[in-house]
Length: 469
Length: 126
Figure 1 (cartoon, rainbow over the protein chains, first blue to last red):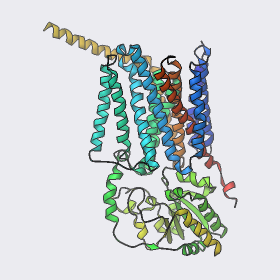
Figure 2 (cartoon, rainbow over the protein chains, first blue to last red):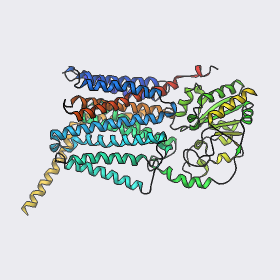
Figure 3 (tube, chains in turn purple, green):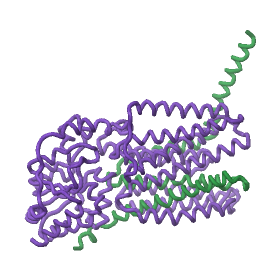
Figure 4 (tube, each protein chain N blue to C red):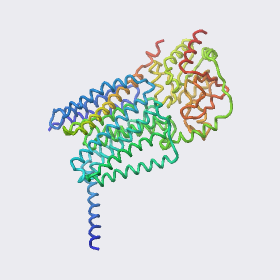
């Protein structure tokens, strides 16, 4: 007996654990990704060329190799060409592909069982992984596609009364259909219940993600990510394949914890995210604070003078900066100010951008030095000694309502204390509300000036003005 | 009367069979169950103390790792009958989306993490 395949799987599994461990530290993160990728390559090659009898080529290698070859190129190009700003939706898309893969495996496996007639005499526990893989995989696929569509703006929010109730009904219906599938397994026409389970799971995927607000999407993607992990683990159970089982369970549990940790960073409870609380309460919260005060509009020239003669400037980047692709010009402004002797720092809120860490990635891309990116806990005490705060396309993370207004959907979320500084300048396209859909009282603060316009153009103007001063 | 009692005991027998079935299943798969439980703890341990900066790359990395489901698709496609075109087609699609998950996942993660490598040296050059 030849155990090479098992050894390949062992190498794969150990690499996954090691890789994930290394990815948890900034210094070794990239290497960790490489280690995990290496483990994956070993496991896949092992599956293709090793069997219990030693070296052998898997049947239908031409199909498999063709599919892989098609994709290695396509996948790499897609991943390489995607803009850094579109990263979250790309992750969601790839996650959906994994879910679809798991669902397809279950479909084929069930068909094979049904055709051979084995299914009629099979104990239910033996095909439990098939059904679980089908349901979880389908929910993950459809959900990820919806999340993908919402993140790139193709799909809007959509909720109606009684949605939670309908979701509950759907879950019961899925369970009922899979039970009927078990009862009628092997009978003529019994396969109908299999397809019913499939369709219901798909509908549930839609209803599960649709009502959740865009700002909570990262949490949902992370959750769906762990779903796909569980679906992969079902495959591992089905084929008694250790690497699939370990990889799947690892992602399933790590993804769940990551989801919880993300929720904590945003100070939201997972339950609230899942039933789409933000979407519902935002309406009332927004209407309430809409009244009162007027905003002060400022000109680029004034802001340029303000910043050039400041001794300390803190830049608060947000998603607006990412959308306008303004990270490079932002770095230019920072270098320019530094050369004028101004102390410049970036205040990074844990959920700035669309995902935790998103802003760091974007700014690092444009060569902003790592030690200039200061996390919220460390920058907050510094605001009282800051002359000018420049808010570029950020909104909810500086909204004082998080501290003062208990009815606000973001109440309790830790924010950047920008109002402690002497001057605040907000670069913003318009007075439109932020992603959480609520107004920001900060803009009515007498210390605050608004510089309207596209973030990139505004920053360019500032750079030009400072140069010409 | 006799009949109902018989069927009742039959039912009970069936139920008992179900119980042993479950126990058998657990017995047969005990190593997998051990593996699963241990892996759950490993996953929790690995992620609990990670700085929030790394959440996005980590999610993306985990996303690539569950691409291991590709192996299932390969196995399924490998054992499909030569003339079973439906299974072959579905399996082919499975391998395609699975590979997309793996390749795309790792490359995107690498691109994100590439950014973290640039330490003060390069950023400081003005």
